[in-house]
Amino acid sequence: MTTPAHEAPLVLPAVAFRPVVLSAICAAITATAVAIAAVLGYPMFGVFFGVGLALGLLNALLVRRAVQAITAKDHPLKSQMALNSATRLLVITAVGLTIAFVFRPQGLGVLFGLALFQVILVLTTSLPVLKKLRAGEDPEDPLTAQAPTTSNDG
Image (tube, rainbow, N blue to C red; front, side, top):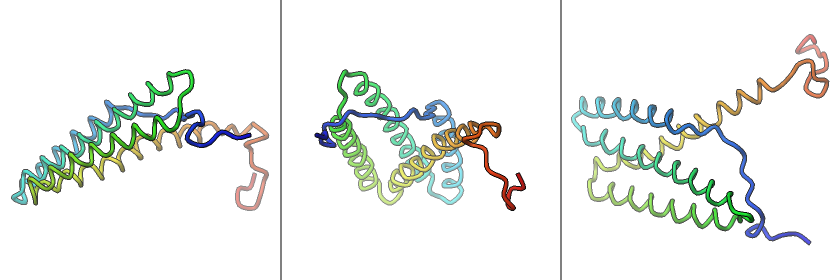
């Protein structure tokens, strides 16, 4: 008998989430966006862009906190994480859309900031993992060593 997916235990891989690095990247991008937007005559677009990056960072920190809290339980459930994620994303989306609507057109920078943050988050968490995976391949290990071929001249 199998466990339904919504009642299955929550298993999450370890990720290389570094909020200090993300904060520094977001600050640098915000400064650049404000400078470029000011030169183009729309400095508030750059400010709202930075607000979007900050909302993305806040979301990532809340994800980490939720994962730690939920996985610390004896029987963490995927449904708890799903409900937490849906609620958090609904609130952040509502805040972003409200800012974009109230302060349009420069307020649209919030949505661009949120979108760019997701790209930055994926890059900053996946690249270190990929580097570790590549470094973990031991050429002396018979399980990971490649057989000689014409392409690698073993």
